[in-house]
Image (cartoon, rainbow, N blue to C red):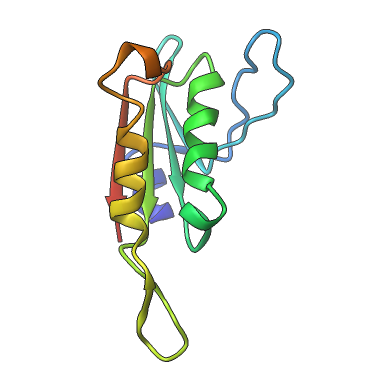
Length: 120
């Protein structure tokens, strides 16, 4: 995944984002791609904690508070597995539904233009 994002698409790895005025943050996403001027995309690759530890919401917040990020690529597992090989949970549909709730109503508006959830 890292090779695709870095070598094929041109993302930088663990770039420190510009802090938002008034917020103390050193946000460092897994990958960052500047698009033009003060616009950009962050890509976050999650494993087991996408929903159990709310990493999906933390990543959305990271995109929301960074002035140079307007788009989020979130890469999450289709399923997390138990030791016996059975599926423990399915983060992909859960993450898509949770993050989709932030779009479509002005009351829940955030400073993120788009979120793209990819399953692996």
